[in-house]
Image 1 (tube, each protein chain N blue to C red):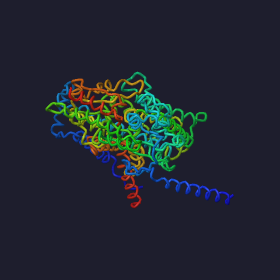
Image 2 (image 1 turned 90 degrees about the vertical axis):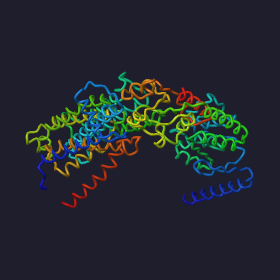
Image 3 (image 1 turned 90 degrees about the horizontal axis):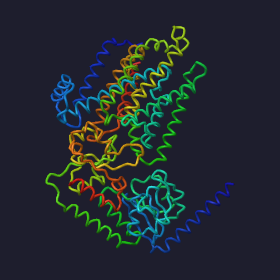
Length: 340
Length: 298
């Protein structure tokens, strides 16, 4: 094992980084608003939360940029921490929050809404609800497929996930193929993004993210035990099957909620936990909180770029996460190998 | 087995060569046309069987009075409502190449939006395909004139273009307000998918005396909410979509409370135009221009 930096310093560093990127993302945007004005606006609304939004600047800061930054942070944290947990659960470095078919399941639900106007009479929340429901139903299906009695073998789970993913993805392709309306909406949704998201979405996601992150953090120790294999964990007093169930259900719900508000944002859940492992090791007591912080920071910055690169237009955030994440990850991987 | 295969190949080669030689014999009856993508197509004239792979091209052929030549069209060619003798060859993504080839067209008309792999398949069978790039009214005029030339009705084409140009000139000549209106054209509300530079609707907004607030973006793009707020459009023109079960686009836009103070929202100046009329680069685009002008100068 390498000599690790004291985790406290890493928490501090990552928190500062998160705060700095949040401030940066609130201050920079398509319309030039100088930082002093931004701080004045934020301060005024913190002191008097009931105040209206008199100027365009106020609306931009309070109703567009801040909710977006918070939403990006929540989604980034949710995906990264779920990814970290699932990689450990499956002891598979390729695992990510979408491994059990949730993304393709959610995409099918979203396509049904976007292409055929399937409606639950919920207006703004039709799409998120459909994505959430179809995503979680897919995971439950995968779980049932892999279950024998009261046990679920992780390998079988992984394989049923892949099968269900392929099946759902084929259904979506079929829907896309036979329909000719609103195709670009589906494509935008599948590439993910925060364009047009509001405080309502933040409020919708908040309980899921808090609950998920909270549950995962309390399970850091049993997760550490699980790294030695299911049998060893059992001898160490971990109720393995129950732990697996909790981890699966919570990550399904957390990822489903994130996908519901942001569409499918790839790469965060796969790469962020690996980056954290490379710099901080695989002790879950450190890995999980750092994944939360770095996941949030990464997605805030990715969203900032998505807004800026081709302003006044926006890029889908999935393009940014993959374009920036992949080379950085390869760099980390190679520099680590050189050091080892 | 091998020998038979070889024999067959030779036979096919001989036959095709013979076919080619025959074609060069009456070379007088061919017409070389370069399309908007720079590809030259050689047509044998007179063209008697035409397949259109775009609603706009179907409209052009019919507006020139050459409906009788159309043997194939797409599922989305809904104007004119009824075309005798033209079979459907599928939708934009479901074009049936075998069916198109089976119709034995002398000419296939397509646009840059048409699936290129399908076009390659058709060209590979030696069927000439003309692809039009339609991003402005000028492009539509050129499209009509080209089709007029290849279908041997140049006078009808010149007359149609003349009528369009006259109406376009009337729109441009109309008195515009001193302060040109800031206009946003919306194809879809979530995400806000809008028309930037080098789009048909950008051309229409300019001609109608407005300023497209997204003219500094290229093509059709997702606009950031912030851009819409700061650029404060006076008028929003949106195309209606046909999705069942969703509220009309105007209501969906009005529900976006962040835009409450944008002039177009404050004054309720959001106009919807049928998507077929607003987004189809055919001869009826001049009708759309007049609708745009009415909205922008209201």
